Amino acid sequence: MPSASELKAIDPWVNVSMLGGMPAPKWLVRVKEDYFKAGEDFLEELTVDQLIGQMDEAGVAKAILSVNVSQPQEGVLSFVAAHPDRFYLAANCDPTRRMKDCWALQELAASQPVVMARVVPFMHDLPPDDRAYYPLYAKCCDLDMPISINTGIPGPPMPGECQNPMYLDRVCLDFPKLRVCMAHGADPWWDVAIRLMLKYKNLYLMTSAYLPKYFPPELVHYMNTRGQDKILYASDHPVLAMKRCIDEALKLDLREGVLDKFLRANAEGLFFAPRKARG
Image: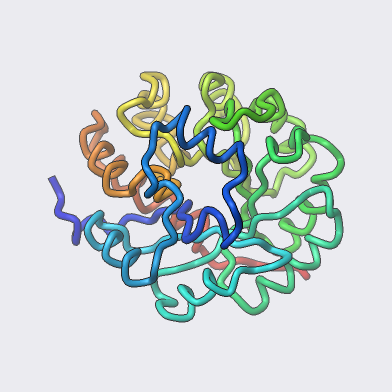
């Protein structure tokens, strides 16, 4: 079993602050207490030193931090400034803001190491094939930037049908060059998600907020076979501690070479390969 220093994992979903200095919304309290059965560390405000220590303990070399694209939190940006070799950004976008967030994404990417855009359909009760998302998809194509889209029934008591992976079928057809990474697994639609990844070369899945010991057999089989380059580790730390997720990943029954792809290489290729922006 590799040591933490040998893993050099990449975690594409890490939260420096779940609240951004604001009171916890009721839906977040519900998901903490009812879904994850978590303690107060679920809402922990992390410092740079704390997060670096947790990353080193888990064997994580790079973390992608969530930031609001229209109002980037200075606290999050300070992590990038302190350790530009360890921290990068995922820009949370609101599709209902149309071009405002498209312009904000382009502006933020020009000054900060933004490696992906991110949308969470349940927050808007809009499936990702709704036309409200299309300007953002076009902008991501222009920037040659991947986009993360939550799939699966969400933990919070919020609308879930809008996160059925099948809604990505039309998106992948209409934007064949857009690199899409499903996030937070795809439960209970794992078979649909896998079938779509077989169909579309630019569709991926990260296992954020989903412990490896709960991976369904069909996902592990796909990881070992035709999906070796498609599935990415992620934690949603501190919702799920990155060390716990990686410790469980090390116990998966994976073929030789697949663990490194899952923990590091697939994320390296998707988020950190040179981009060819068009505008």
